[in-house]
Length: 411
Image (cartoon, rainbow, N blue to C red; front, side, top):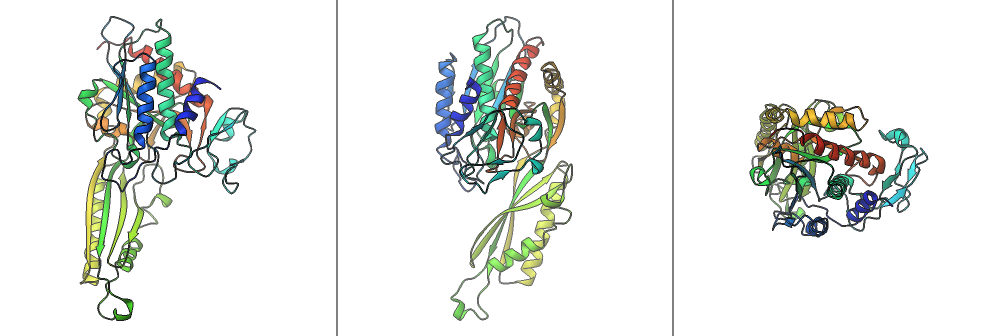
């Protein structure tokens, strides 16, 4: 087993599932289990400044191998996995020399990664794939990124002939809850440019993301024994259901949009007769659309309150992140050198706009230009998730090539 594959499987077995309902940071203490492991491994590699802070965020510095002052580059990935699918007792399954057929996952044979329904799978025939056993997610988002960074760091530290400037490493928590940079200060990170390793496939450079807010709709009703409810009960579940039903879905939902189209996405519904809550994602590549989406939610709430005068329907909007494309103009070399690195590694760069976000969205907004790069992961947030070892290896090559290229730049 290659060092990269062994690292990835070791990290995947650590349960780091985050919890969107938690108010703490990290949202789950178990994220620190992997953070502590990474701090120890970075120290074993010889990075004496490696540390995990009180928030579970790990940082370290790969020292330069040249005296010329160059820009400081950072590599970032997140240790947490999606709240949507269990990360407990992950059992990585290695499929060597993939035969190009549907993949039946051994722990739950009803879970099948179907060739006809899975982008990128056919191109991986003959390669080494990694899946879970089907009872959990794999966690390649973003443990593939973590493993790629650790392997690239080990490669640079083992070969002093590679000329490069200082490189900062940062592993964050709670990216999946939208809070990954909550306790990261871009200035304290000490970098001029950064790259998140949090993209799928290979050769992709993601230089644009959604702008994003989150809405929490709280419906307050009145509960009483149903036998005594006539003229008294106000059922929050019914009113919340009406709220969801009045959201546009034929033109403004994830199921019916693609490419650069915006959407509203109700994704959490919980509560009872007395109170019900709905969480809704607001997404658009144009941040000016977000207030319009919020206004639509407020109008639905006002209409329902008028129809149900004894109920209360409140909409709370929380800012999440903004499209990184504008902030990347601050340092044009961030994308230009990523493109050159991908080409130098024998691939054709693919520029993509993410219908989502990364820690790089917030870091860029905070003044640290941070495009997102491929890691070889696919089908993330699902038990049908998989990763390709050869694509992960290419991601390592790209990082080492970036180290060389930035080592030729002037600060």
